[in-house]
Image (cartoon, rainbow, N blue to C red; front, side, top):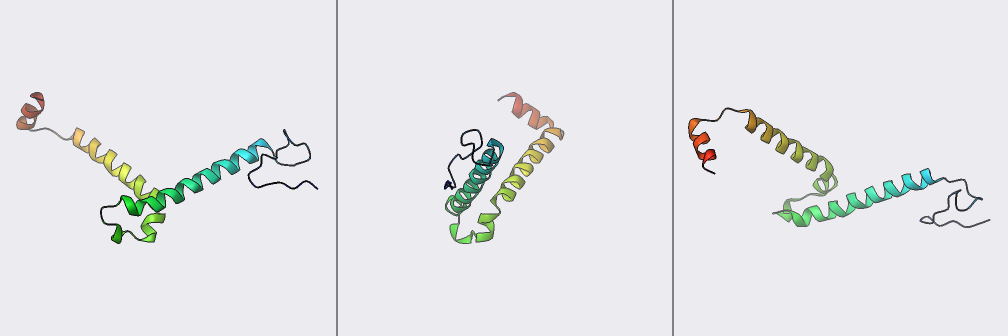
Length: 97
């Protein structure tokens, strides 16, 4: 019996005696990469904060949701600011820039 490593590319196309395919390999690599990125960023969230003492473990683990909310709020605020009417003073100030 051939011993297979967890990170070895033991797929049917390379080693005919295995049952895994390149699709299984790609899915595994994508999941491991995403999990690694999540952990690394979760650790860094505390050190990138203005107040590292206030960052909880929950904040660190939910960083994708916090980041998505940040992007949504930023996009919505820029959209709503572009849709509102400008006063004559604002128009003058923007035309001189």
